[in-house]
Length: 139
Image 1 (tube, rainbow, N blue to C red):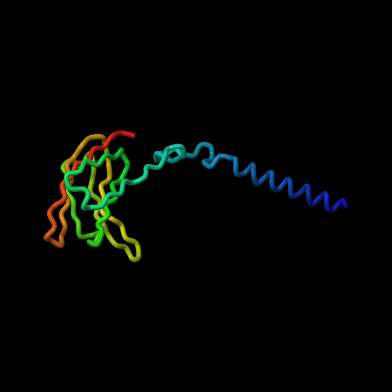
Image 2 (image 1 turned 90 degrees about the vertical axis):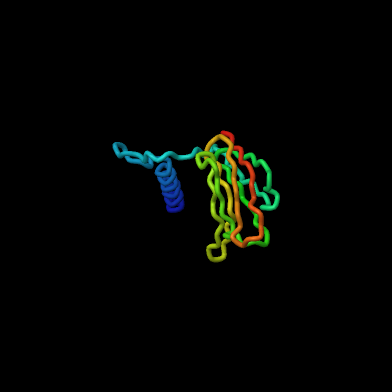
């Protein structure tokens, strides 16, 4: 019976030491910590806005800073579109691409508050350029 109590006590001490080690500092005292900004876990993730390319002509798309417009190209190749953004301080075009078995649609990434015009053209020709407005607001 004494052996069982000793084993139980050793287990409790080992568990307590393990938990105490997890609660300690991750950066030793006196060591410089990383100066890279980290996003708070409480910051909500912003879902992308998805629209069909055919629905963008003349549209105004509302985004918040950090949000992405995901453009569904339908039957056309995702890398067949190019985009020009009038004010790249407000938003930038992200080229669509295929990477192995993964397919990434083209899109617009909101950078700062403001409004800008976007023109997308298709390399396959015969398709009129898509012209639309992106309005970006702060979170």
